[in-house]
Image (cartoon, rainbow, N blue to C red; front, side):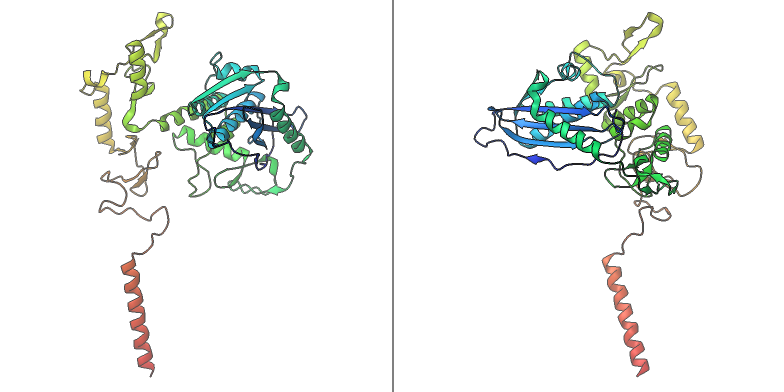
Length: 400
């Protein structure tokens, strides 16, 4: 497993696909590699070749993140290679692979459970669908010599670089005696935190069902799951993956299994697909019947049950009694215990707790704008200057 701070080498372009053959068949060679020495660094190499095996594009770079496994390194290399090929306008590509587990995964002969590797595999398959055709080909290691050499050069180079022992300050605990190799940098904003503080921040946000953003004050950058997963337990990783799935489904398309013992989240598209294939949506199992999968929701459930259930009525009555307010965007129920009536939901939507209207669109006071002082309108600026100049003229006249 690889651990340490990676650096990025600029990709080396050997050219672009010939415009005369936009639909030619190109070849992708990729290799992810993890060193076996105590420094444990990882790197990847990519080569895109034409029909005559002439190199059109090549690159090498260390791999971001700590504790990178060989499988993750290979998946990252494949994902980067496919992304570069897509960016070059390639429509047809052959994927040359020398690592048996990767070949079995991308051909559908093996599956991965929800994990960091599983998420990377889903991203790879998503990119593949953007090509007109992509053919995985299993080959011997010597047949991917371009990518292998690039990855090996990166790992050897990184191994020779000494780990930076410069002391860095964590923005949360303000500890000034932390080694750089124990710090974590957020890609999008560049803020630095020690791994322990960031781990606790993520745990709290996940348990509070909030967005996992950069801990820096007023920073809106989202933390990437792929880089932070190694800090968390498998249970918290599963919660985060579920949160990512929820965020990917528009609120209007979300559907929860009506089975009280299930409540699995589905989208209307997913529901239609499974209904067409099997006639029912199958998402939960009744363990009392030896694990036999049973139907727990149909596409017509809302139409067949238009009236709220007894529990729905109890929840609404309790919400009215406690004066809870429902977010107008994600429908999440919110209780205000104290503070300003301007509410920011976990989905990012801001609204007035008193009337439910979007923040700034109702007559109720909301206290100071959490985003900072708003600029003055142009007419007010002009009026201020006119008053200032008038007073200045009066002062000058009075002095004379």
